[in-house]
Length: 130
Image 1 (cartoon, one colour):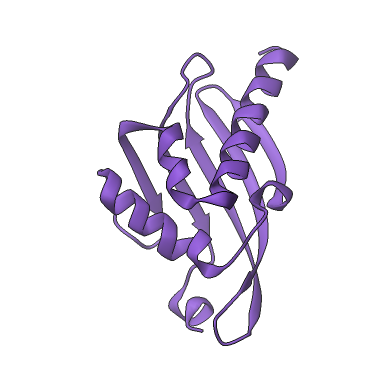
Image 2: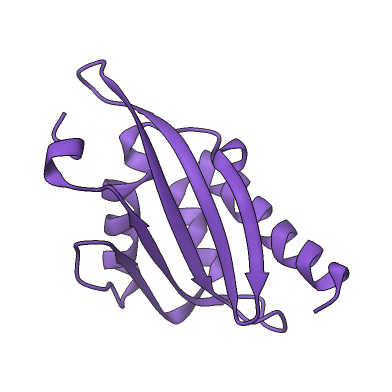
């Protein structure tokens, strides 16, 4: 894999996360219509409506902004893009919490859309109950 391939994959991630910061629904533009989304502890979502709900509840709806700066490390191993994230969430109660997670995007370098994404991190009820 060339450095150019790695740079293209990173550019794809940065573009998607910048767009997601303005509107979470933009993420669906980067995932194949048949794509699968799963978050640790929840069943995989296979349709766009459930995908939007999972994304909103588990990630962006928790008031985190600036996902681009949350990406601490991006690595590529075709057909996967791994993104380590560390994000501080501001909950409605005013509490804050840092959540670290790994997003594994199922995307070959030749494709413009991901086939799915798996999010692994501490999304336990105790850590999300604010």
